[in-house]
Amino acid sequence: MSPEETSEARALRRIEAFRHRRPRLVEEVVTLAHGAGGKSSAALTEAVFVEAFANPVLATLEDAATLTLPSGDRLALSTDSYVVQPLRFPGGSIGHLAVHGTVNDLAVSGAEPRWLSAGFVLEEGLPVEVLRDVVADMTEAAARAGVEIVAGDTKVVSRGAADRLFVNTTGVGVVPAGRELGTHLVRPGDRVLLSGAMGDHGMAVMLARGDLALEADIASDTAPLTGLVADLLAAAPGTRWMRDATRGGVGTVCNELARQAGLGVVLEEDRLPVHPAVTGACDLLGIDPLYVANEGRLVAVVPAEQTPDALAALRAHELGAEAELVGEVVAEPPGIVAMRTSFGGTRIVDMLVGDPLPRIC
Image 1 (tube, one colour):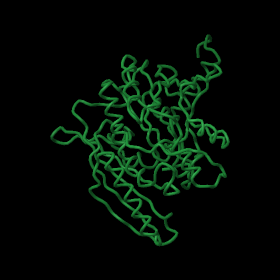
Image 2 (image 1 turned 120 degrees about the vertical axis):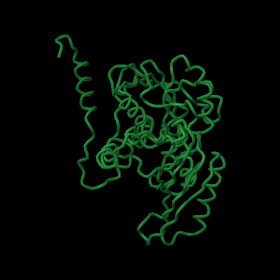
Image 3 (image 1 turned 30 degrees about the vertical axis):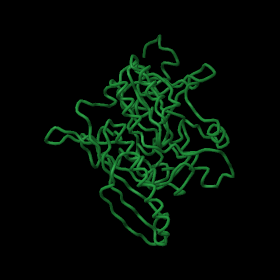
Image 4 (image 1 turned 135 degrees about the horizontal axis):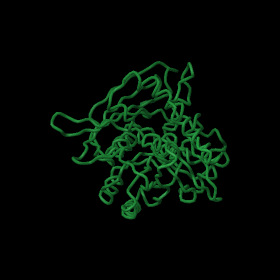
C-alpha cells in the first residue's frame, strides 16, 4: 500500500477485494432470498447450478444463451418460471408475465424472438375459468410480441402442493448476422440509459396482495420490449449491452454489469425516473425503488457519441417516453456501482441480500 493512498482509496480497495470474492452458499436450506435476484441468488446459482452444469455458454450468465448452429446461424435460448401471487394485478397477470418476461430476455440479448413453449403446473381445485383467463392473456401477449406458442406441457399436483398455478416458458429467437452484445464490449466512458420509471411492477403486485392496507394508483409496466429494442439498435448500432430490470431492479442490473465487465458504474440519483406514487409507497415500506422490479424497462449501455440518437429513439417509442441518461461507465473502482446523490455526496449501491418483495414475477 502506498503511503500516499488516502483513507477513501483504501476503503474502496478493500470493498473491491471483498466484492470480487466468489459468493458463498452458506445456507443449508433454500429461502425466499435465493429467488430475489441479489447476492443470495448469485450464491445459489454459482455454487449449485453453474458448478454442476459448467460450460462456456452458461458461464456468460446472460439472460439468454447464444447458440451457433453448424450452418453458422445463431439462435438465442432463454427459459423462465413464473410464480407471481396474486395471479392478476393492475396492469397484467401471470399470463402476460410468462410471455413478456421470456420475450424480453431474448430481445435484450440482441435476438428477434420467434417461438415459445409453455409448461403449466396446476393445483388440484383450480377453477378452469381461471386457467382459461391466463391462457387468453398469454395469447394476447404473444400476438403483441410477435411470437408463437408452439409447444407445451401440463402437470396437475394435489391440493397444497402448489399455489394455484405456476407457468414456465422457454423462448427461441434468431440473432441477426453481425449483431453482438455483451459486457466484454463495454468501455469506460460509455453511457447508461434507462428506458422508463423504476419499480412500477413490483409495487403494483405488492399492493394488489392487500396485506399492506395501502392504496395507490400503480399499474405494472409489463410489456414486450421487442419494438423498443429494435428502434434502439437501429438508432445506436454500437449499443454494447442491454438487460431488462426485473428481479432486484436497476440496482442489481448495474451491479451485474459492473461485476461482469470489470468496470465501475456511476449513477446520477437526480436522473433516475420514479413515479410519485411508487416513491410514496416505497417510502412508507422502507424500500429503495432502485431495487424494485420492472417487467417492461431496460437498461442499455451505449457509446457516448451515440447517446443522443439512442435516447431520442427510446423516447420516440411509447414504452420509452420516460427514458433517461442515468449514468456512466468508469474504469475505477472496478466492480463497484456508486451513486451521486441529490445532496452532492456519493454512496455505494450494493446488491441486496434479502428479498423485500417476494414472488413478484
